[in-house]
Length: 293
Image 1 (spheres, rainbow, N blue to C red):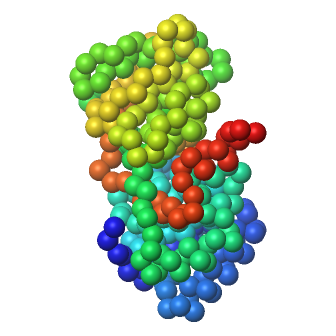
Image 2 (image 1 turned 90 degrees about the vertical axis):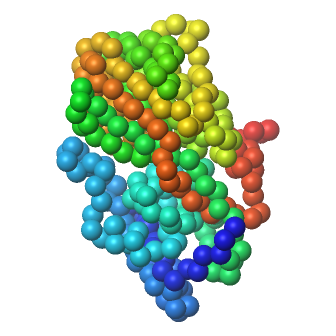
Image 3 (image 1 turned 120 degrees about the vertical axis):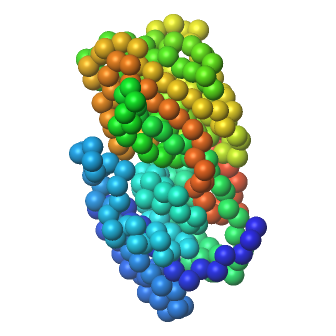
């Protein structure tokens, strides 16, 4: 682990959470008293609806990312996912303080925040580098959209749509034609999210793997499959079916037509999550999934 001097900290706050906003103010004062530059950003909680706005950052968010070595997130996993999209390619450390319900990614409790920051400023920290995936939505030769995900890329149908058919290719090799309500392509981080609800496996965060999980498959022999994360995955919607959408981390959505393709590759950059020294991944699983209770 190489020591990184922290001179500027960005604070990202969960939308419409008065307690988190109050903590952000107190944290800003604490950091300023120690000579640390501070910038605060609050998501409005509403994902963009217009295609030209999806994946774009405000100038304020971009400036915070560019000048911060560390970003403290006061929120839940949804706020962390929004922060991952906000950070983009930047090599920034992220500390998550749980103000949400589950908190798989926001490991630190509020009472641990200041002691954790003191340790970080002294260079005493471990980085959990989480794999991210890049996705491109293509229609013929035209690329309609692209984005990066921390959890998952999902193709699924609206409530009134029929079972859909999705062809899957891995490094140019045909894998299967899945007939299902949809398909999830999940990172190890996302394996405890939608993937888990759909019956997919839990994958240890540091594994170099991606899992493809069909949602309510028409044929029960269509099961989740784990593949290397350096593979190029191509999904193709086979039939014309209104209401089929591509969603990235559950926060941005794009309409799909028959013949549309989604190309998925491992991102060059990782999400650099700081870990509490007194807990490990299995502690988190036992707590969140209530194992043994």
